[in-house]
Image (cartoon, rainbow, N blue to C red; front, side, top):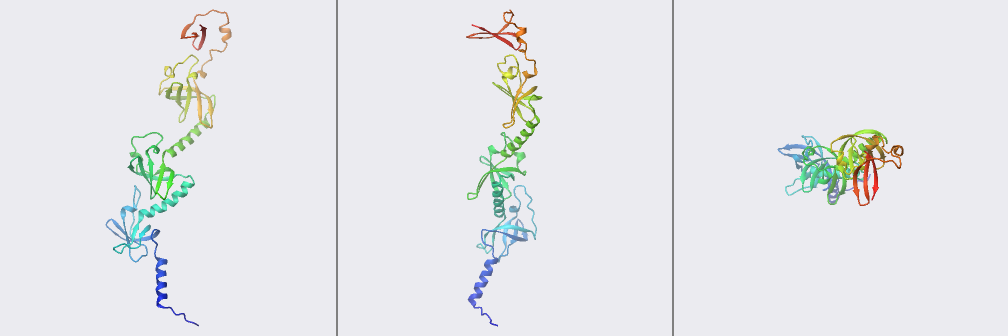
Length: 312
């Protein structure tokens, strides 16, 4: 049986290969074991010639539980195998960031929600911790309506929608508003499904404009047009309605695609024009009240809701 001779050069090469195979490469995430805790530092063994030190604060950020103890196995990022004092340079924060980026990219491509924690205020918005990766939340994307006090939203896990990701620049932009709008759209859809044309419901006047009033039907708004408020002439909705007033309305029309609802009040009253020919026959004489004067004539009210024109 032939015996293979190993030279000194071969032995050095094999030994070097062994070190390279077992030695974590710089810029990678590896598992390490906590071998000691000294004051505010954790001593981590990742299989190198020397251990590395990581500040305990890196294991607990933005309100998350970061308690560790001797013997805990943690994933860390190898920044450098050995620094000037012969220690491995490790980072838990960078490891969490690397882990998060892979997961977040998958969720972003699948258009899925992510969970994060608002933990700081910066110029133009806020910073959000997405399990290690730090994202920017523009102030306009916090809520559907501007909010004065964001305190109750700080340090609380909640869902966000990723609007943009750029790993090369390390930028992530998220939105809380998109989640709220999606939830509101779902609620609006459920409410619309329960409503029917011709149904009579109670609503609260939410806003008044020149062309009508918006009425809250319990989570969704309907438009009460000025021409559908009463049979008589209404110059402005504020003549009849007040914000905060509860009124009874009929659902005149529903657009299930746009979730737009048209409402009416006069539909709940008898139409004064029914049987008008018999009540006011042609050639008969009646007394009326002048309600409006124009260049081409005058409008005269015979009874509420019934007007005629005396041409100039």
